[in-house]
Amino acid sequence: MSSTPYDVLVVGSGAAGLTAALTAAEHGASVLMLTKGHAPDSSSWHAQGGIAGAIGDDDTAELHAIDTERAGRELCRQSAVRVLVEEGPERVRELMAFGVPFDPELNLEGGHSRRRVSSVDGAHTGWAITSLLGRRAAATDGIAVREATAVRGLLIVGGRCLGALTPDGPIFARATILAMGGAAALWSRSTNPEGQIGDAVAIGAVAGAAIADMEFMQFHPTVLEGSRLLLTEALRGDGAKLIDEKGERFVDELAPRDEVSRAIVRHGRCFLDLRSIDRDRFPGLMIEIEKSGYDPALVPIPVSPAAHYTIGGIVTDLDALTDVPGLYAAGECAATGVHGANRLASNSLLECLVFGRRAALAALGEPPLPAQIGDVPPTPPERVASQELREQVWLQAGVIRDPGDLAVLATSHDPVAAMVARFAIARAESRGVHYRTDAPIANPVFEGHFVLRPGQGLILEQWT
Ligand SMILES: Cc1cc2nc3c(=O)[nH]c(=O)nc-3n(C[C@H](O)[C@H](O)[C@H](O)COP(=O)(O)OP(=O)(O)OC[C@H]3O[C@@H](n4cnc5c(N)ncnc54)[C@H](O)[C@@H]3O)c2cc1C
Image (tube, rainbow, N blue to C red; front, side, top):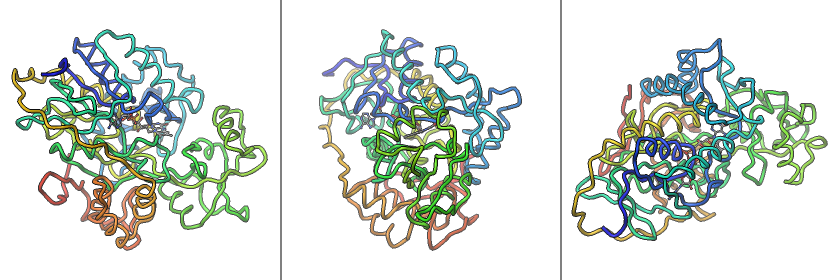
């Protein structure tokens, strides 16, 4: 072996990767955490609204499960939801104990029947959590961190994952945990950092992992035109109005994200009018808007939908184990089935903590590396998403989808873009975040998860 082997290799330094790395190191494992960019290149760093968790006096895990399943439109995997809501409160309390400076009041967000969202300064939750966990990881002896190192493939020997392939050579580990985030930046309009183009799905599929639910991309309706800046739902909750070029309202601002997104796409150019709300409640966001050249006190802000959260990903069990021995996936790159066809707001940071921890605990049980590994394949070339590809994905697999467009996208040279189209073609109905012009309502025939396994076509599975 040419490089020092680790017990656990964690790919990604967002909330899921940090949680997995810290948990594994706490239990004595040697950990290498690799990341393509730097800390702010993760979606976790940019998360705004908060983290859900039934910690209020009037709340229960059961109520949180009901809300999650209602949002997921008959597709949530109930066992995964149970794990999320039952372990969630402890994970949130742990963050409090670590010193995340949560606001004293819990927030109420769309789709939640109780106040259960913990946030920091209104819209700085992701940064507060990620930077604190990042400092803890940097101070932990058992964790080595390597930034600006993209994983381009996985090292599979005899069907088992023994590490990853990078431009600097192979990295060997007893267990590999992918915490590589989503694919939303494959769409030209996106809230995600530019590098979030679904590398986990691309390399996972090549390694033999099953992929599911790739048709479900959640679009956020109110993103500042020409930018990645998300203007949180809380603004609309506080009375901000969506208006058209004539200054007229055309949609219920508090309808679910998918409905608002479709209304905007159908209606044309649209603006978020913040003039009547208490802008002092969102100081950081107001500064960001001003930096972009708009004065929210004077003019309505142009907004449009953008790809935001990837519900699909690498199929895992409840311990984040994929179909490939030794390979785990947690956070946004995993498909646990917990979100069904539509993610409930603020459940994704929670998912990162709950399943990132479970991944690490399960990974500790992987057997030692074999004494001889044999020939290591060369590192594959970098996967690059051109602006042209991102525009194509936006146009052909956007908020409102046409089967003819999807058929063209299915022939894309990019494996993830083609996969999104294939899944969206297979789901010939509209459900949750996936909307088809030719089949605008949900069809009970499709109550299940489309799964792609190596060498097989898409299969609809029931997950319990
Ligand atoms: C603007 C915005 C606001 C949001 N607000 C909220 C919110 O309020 N509440 C909520 O619950 N969720 C929110 N979300 C969603 C949530 O932030 C994400 O789902 C979650 O943070 C994903 O965490 P993760 O650890 O799975 O991935 P990320 O945080 O995206 O981390 C992925 C990591 O993988 C690395 N990586 C990717 N590819 C490679 C590669 N090839 N090689 C090596 N490293 C790689 C990246 O560099 C990064 O470090 C928001 C998302 C965005 C973008």
